[in-house]
Image 1 (cartoon, rainbow, N blue to C red):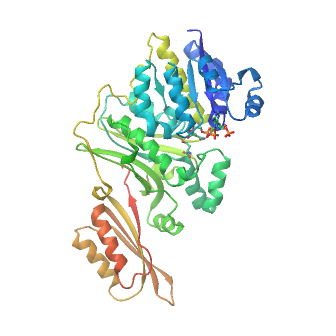
Image 2: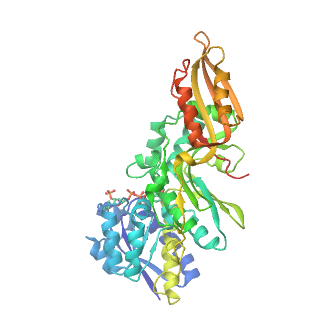
Image 3: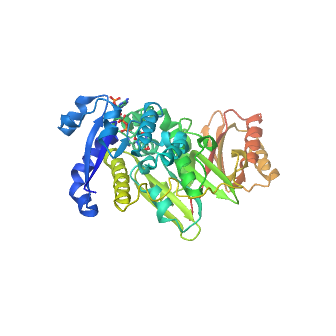
Length: 436
Ligand code: NDP
Ligand code: HSE
């Protein structure tokens, strides 16, 4: 192979990054592969933007068919599951390879697209769809192929991590921090996907499929975002030695799988607890290797484009060695690994918890609360009382437990909520040790 032709659909943050990576690193990549990677066609709604960046009007395409016709690989960087889905299908049905950074597309339509790719004797690669530039899919699919994966957990959304860091470190409001994340190109076109945890849920859906060899099933993810998180709890958690991060977690225990995304307290001594800004970090527990941590830029133009271009290069190398399709199956498993597997409802998970209740001080309140835990045989690891208004005797009570069943904790929360002296909504957050 002398040239490998690349067509780009969508020339925004990541699309323009792909152009930049190939421009900057062309000779390096050629030296490594012996292949010339050439962008042959670009489709975007804003043609002037494309020409301003590429300085080459001959690259402009007026429709998707033109891009497909001129390329070996179609790189979809439009986003979403509307036109991007239609274009992806068209490219595959034309027998072209597809590379995408679109986690929504893979999490929701991946199974169908992988099957379509098989039928058309082609392949789909999607490294940039999870954790931006970090090669976590490659690590799970190739680097850890000799291991059984027990769990994967991490910070999978750069926008929310940026917001939480800016609020905590620089005192920015939620709205200002979100607006900055949008300006910096980290956020999704619809940022509610970031802040409501949907983007992280798309990513953990993909991770679970690759880690455990199960079909992609977005509906199995329990999702809570950061919009209900209160700064007060971030502060209290810090006083207790924890940081709060939006964590995506997929765990397999005895053929039972739990997949969830929610704000999570993590002991401040863990590396993951100290990951700030748009950076991502993914911790993988493998049965032979033990824990490994993958850290890097989870969003942004060049970092994400780095993963996109790596997929293109991987494909071209595979093809250059005589393979028609990419040599590893999409989720890394030749045969399904889902026989006998079931999914845990959120009520049945066991983990750590942080609860905060707001009380008017009266005799016996703390005794009543501790009793509720004793009745369920749950040991309390820390309990703090914070006086809020001296004259009104209003207190916040914070309780931390290291391990309990969610169902039991929910019952306790309901009972605290009904206590006479309770004057607010009980806050429940989960706590994960994230390996020692
Ligand atoms: P952008 O919004 O910056 O870029 C998308 C581009 O597609 C825009 O230039 C848009 O044009 C163009 N577009 C929209 N509709 C069409 C259409 N019908 N035909 C041709 N072009 C179209 O998004 P990003 O680059 O940030 O994201 C692209 C993908 O990468 C998404 O799936 C995202 O989730 C994923 N991703 C993004 C990361 C990031 O850090 N930004 C990181 C990892 C993954 P216009 O602007 O004129 O609407
Ligand atoms: N909006 C996503 C994030 C982009 O903030 O992580 C990277 O997938």
